[in-house]
Amino acid sequence: MPFVLPDLPYAYDALEPYIDAETMHLHHDKHHEAYRKKLVEAVEKHPDLGDKPAEELLRDLNSVPEDIRTAIRNHGGGYVSHCLFWESMKPSGGGEPSGELGEAIEKTFGNFAELKTKFNEAGTKHFGSGWVWLVVKDGDLSIITTANQDSPLSQGIVPLMGNDLWEHAYYLKYQNRRPEYLEAWWNVLNWDAIEERFNRA
Ligand code: MN3
Image (cartoon, rainbow, N blue to C red; front, side):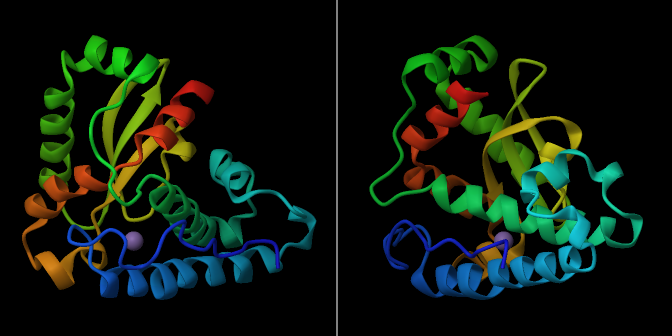
């Protein structure tokens, strides 16, 4: 099978109290697994796609055979974005990034607090399911949201970190209080991983 469900890089309850263990189990074991499974089913219809990484398929959706394009967009997007999501968090995370990413945040947003405010606002205002992202777009940092499981990669944009705005990501603990979940998320961010992504971008 070409696409595997990565193990969480920490225990299911490691992000408590910000993200509860039950949500992590459902989110990783059921939701992420469902995207992975449907991505595999789609790709299996076109053996000619070979072992192309999902990221590559998403970057060039127009070259994906039409009969599976929507499936790749939805389930490939879901598969890839969730891989990035788990890696962007860690127990006892949070704080502020330093180094070149820290400097770029100051240059673009003025300061870290402003990045956080703008990111949370964008995530709160986004209607329905989707993601809010910190990305590198045309060489600069930017905050965007995408609908459903659409990946920034399909717009030629490099995602550095993204928070999941689907209710499955927060409803058990936060119910309809999405802003509270968005605020709490900053306590579990793994800035080392995000900085590394920035340095590669
Ligand atoms: Mn999700």
